[in-house]
Image (cartoon, rainbow, N blue to C red):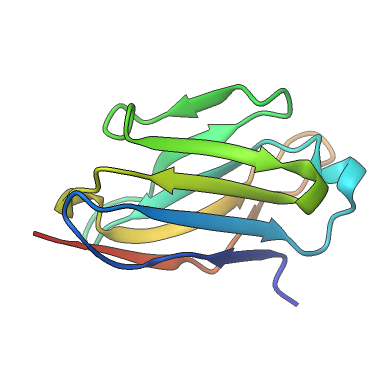
Length: 120
């Protein structure tokens, strides 16, 4: 069973918007709220890079390239994080992966990836 269930990818024109969702299908609510969650992306021929992450206290961290355009949020009651992507650019085209950050006593997990394609 897939632990991190991603949805929301697709094809959009430059300047458009998409919202990605990632639901933790296996953690209980009280545990999910303690995890740092995030989104990474990997474009063809490039290394996987952090897009944004969100701590249990809801503080967020963004890559410089997406600041002001992307917003990451979490709904602990739904065990879900959301990445709102606005003003999309062709260079945002990549496979986007949901991530649960590992730590002491916490295993790291990755989603299966969802394709985002921005046409010019």
